[in-house]
Image 1 (spheres, rainbow, N blue to C red):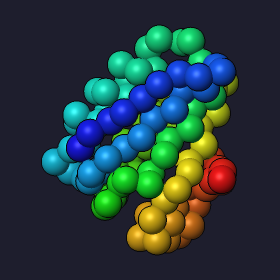
Image 2 (image 1 turned 60 degrees about the vertical axis):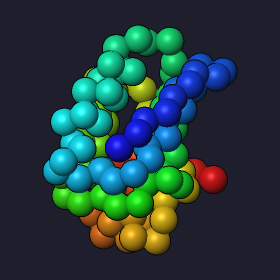
Image 3 (image 1 turned 135 degrees about the vertical axis):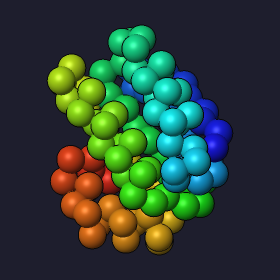
Image 4 (image 1 turned 90 degrees about the horizontal axis):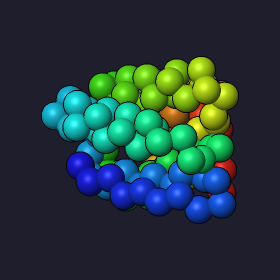
Length: 102
């Protein structure tokens, strides 16, 4: 797992690269929590265009980060999921709490 990020116009852009699963969950969780600890943004956009695979552990990581940001009234948006991840988001209802944007 590789995580790229930048802040632009009060938006934290995050790109997840690789696989978000049991093996990378702890690393991903820690990286995202570190990024979120610096409140110099008003929203988060997570780009999944380079995320090749995600399992239920990955879903848990994203839900946990959503809950942390929700308490600070900071929305999370998802963009560019592949077909596999798109299906997961639709089946689990994740788009209701983390809407998909173009």
